[in-house]
Length: 167
Ligand SMILES: CC(C)(COP(=O)(O)OP(=O)(O)OC[C@H]1O[C@@H](n2cnc3c(N)ncnc32)[C@H](O)[C@@H]1OP(=O)(O)O)[C@@H](O)C(=O)NCCC(=O)NCCS
Image 1 (cartoon, protein in one colour):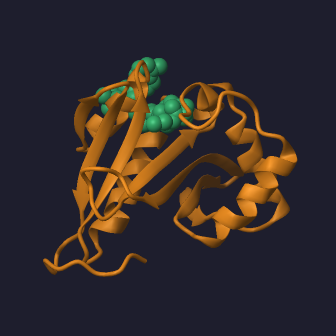
Image 2: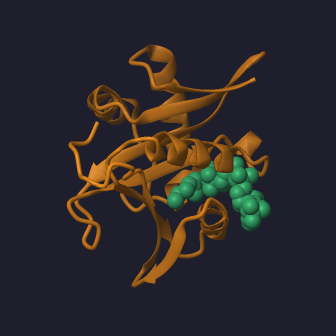
């Protein structure tokens, strides 16, 4: 069975997320770095980030196997004021092409769609990452070409028609 759960502040999730952060495809498609993270660099960032929530792991429960992760960072992004949820996701190399990226992205949209406040979720995609473009497109995101990158955007929530504080 597939399960999405919050990342836990423990040694197992620390090690797993470090291994995933150093996946060669993740580095290639990252805007923030060009090389591997050391354990110390990751541990410092992990401790801070896990406290903020909005970071989940997809796993198979029987037998237990970690499959991928998805995270939302709320940031000021021009054009999507006051802020947008920037999505980072990856699927473990051994499990790509099975629809798991789509499963995580749809689950994320459903999660925020049930909220009363309207928000933008965005994917910032490097040129050439056609797999990600197909993924976001297939999940109902508008694909917008921008200088040097591709932006995938979707508005979620907003059932009450008024803006509320973020979770
Ligand atoms: C991008 C990523 C998350 C996609 O996850 P995934 O589980 O492999 O993707 P899915 O199986 O759900 O497929 C999603 C779409 O990609 C397409 N796809 C899958 N494998 C592909 C490949 N090798 N080349 C091109 N498209 C491919 C699928 O056909 C599907 O599109 P469709 O709905 O039109 O058929 C995964 O490849 C990954 O972790 N990449 C490295 C990190 C990364 O790039 N993260 C995103 C940064 S924005």
